[in-house]
Image (cartoon, rainbow, N blue to C red; front, top):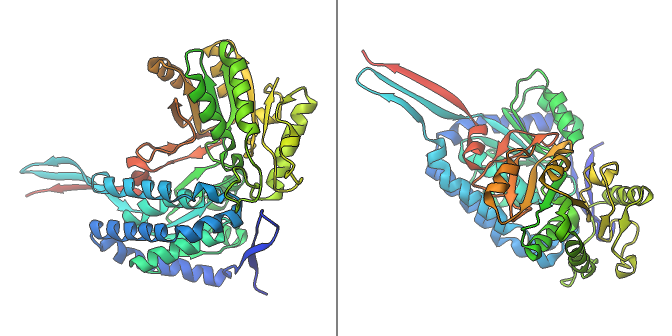
Length: 460
């Protein structure tokens, strides 16, 4: 009996899509096709590969009117926000623009006696396991540079967003990228693990949970397959006494609540200097109280359902536990009658919180944020580092040297000053601790999607 993948819509519990999973034999055949196509693809001129990838990206843009409501049905993001094409295009275009330089050989010597240089070789077949929360942007982070660098790609998308991989495959194939070079596949967990254990892939990029990352590493144990992992996050914001209060509160609260809080680098905890604390909290409550929770297909909706009932249940549990321990909720439930106890979850701001509460330690990945008052930089640094995760930290100050000084002491992958919840494709997207390892985008992204190969050529 054929196993199937079902995408249950958070909008109304209906089945958005149902797809058959590849059997182990079919999955191995897909691997074989990807491997067989790789050398010919890598032999194409770099400019041709860049052109084909960017044509595929533009094709995705032409589908945007259909993609936006599809995303609402699959994972609940309101249609008013218009999808992900802006960031999708920005990331691919930047990686295309730096490809020549990033992939160019590093010349060590060119003399009468020797030619010595380090070349970049594509790994071969790359497996990309993408998440549902930003399904286009997270996928393109690896898909575009992997293809440009000469790898072939198999994309396994999250079960909550199966239509995304199909859209990307359609767009890229219509652009002229061969079907065996870019494959969208529907794989079960056991089949995926078996393929990884059999060393089917030459590089694996996974974005998802810490538990998922551990499963990938266990499957790959002993294969020496290079792996890039972006896992959990509990990103902090720190508002110093010299910050622009209005900009800080608007950006940090948006970073906490946008996409129903389901952002890899969303703000999950905020520390505010004493002189600004009361005003910050007051303005934050005003902003959140004005949100409209509802059907994401309604253009008036600003906050849609979470992608799955179980995700909302975890956030409710964290909030309830915090309140039981003494936290104070500031958002009035009467403002959000659409909270149905299922996937539709009202936003919440908590004060009088501390790090004994899970809502300040564990990843929430939902529309809740705790706000604490801090007395100085030392206390803020200690609290920001008191986490098993390290993806981004957002610092708010008018003093760039102070931000850099604090940033050097933070255990994080990215330090922001006066902004948050943004991925800059010119910088390496990376993390530390349980957030994962490796790095995407930027020149470093290309280095991780290729291997160095040294040439020591002696002239006689």
